[in-house]
Image 1 (cartoon, one colour):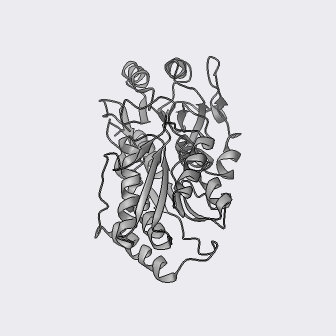
Image 2 (spheres, one colour; image 1 turned 60 degrees about the vertical axis):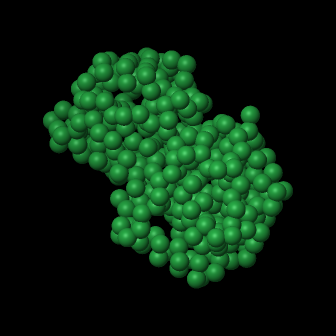
Image 3 (cartoon, helix red, strand yellow; image 1 turned 90 degrees about the vertical axis):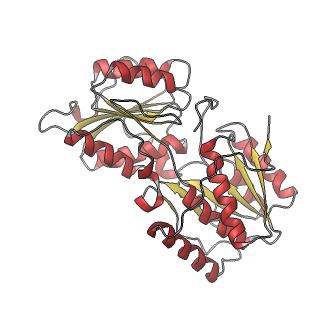
Amino acid sequence: MAAHVNPSRRIFIGAGLGGALLALTGCGGRTGDVPAGTAPAQGSTGGGAGSKLKVFGAYATPIEEPWDGVIHQALQKVADEGLITYTHSDNIGYDGGMERILRDVCNTDKPAIIFGDAFGNEDPTRAVAKDFPDVAFAFGSGEEEVAPNYSVFDNWIHDPAYLAGMLCGGMTKSNVLGVVGGLPVPEVNRIVNAFIKGAQEVNPKVSVKVTFINSWFDPAKAKQAALAQVAAGADVLFAERAGVIEAAKEKGLLSIGCMGDQKEQAPESVMASVTWNMEPTVRAVIEAVQSGTFSASNLKDHSFMKNGGSDLTEVNTAVAGGIPQDLVGRVAARKAEMKSGAFTTPVIETTPAGSVELS
């Protein structure tokens, strides 16, 4: 994501990762303004001989927010396996709290690794990393990595977005699809543009209405934008923002979720979800630190579908009206080609033509 992004950041698509993430909010860590020091889980150390690596998560938004929630979920899973000890602070915001908390944690708890989200907090996170070169930093960022210890990652979910577009292009009856996005920045644009390309592969007559709500999390605004698209003819919706699936459910229309599997929100509406899996990235960083080979790098490849970092969930053929098996098969065939390398999804990060930005 571009460095100029509005620091209010992202809640990615739909209402989040559903009950799984809501359940995780009680799994260690602290929420909001963190007092000096964050007690490490299970009494771990920073990674001495025979000890588990101590890992800290620093999140600007609540972990119920899907983008940061995906990172948290992956770290919690690795902690549950007994490979690391993990604590976190979420809902830190963008008003100076990030730098204060990171410095406090580095001085007091001395973690081996810090994961987090630097969008809206690029300068503070990099300043702290520079002052603590022995700590491995891995942050979601739209900027470059910085030697020796600041690695970056982003969600590269354009492959499953393309597949989702194929589904929607094949299911629309009006030949009009709707997409509600956050802000027209490269990260979001490449998802939306891949979705459009996928829809056009299956249905050359399709048109796609794209609305950016200029907020990372405003479900009411996203729902209203989606309803406006429906009023203008859209009959299948891609929920790049929270609130869109609710609109689809209300109108009895089909939809696509994103970031996490959102089928449970509306089983009769959600055909599939575009998902991001941070486990490959998390495990790669942990293994590098454990082996003493960690260095600053761009970790984006770990988010590619062919590497297990993103996917389209199993197509939900039980949605209202069902989904033709030949369309399901066509999507599956393209997915196999993506994983084998026989097909490469175009990466287009310019703002989609004809899109609308709300104030």
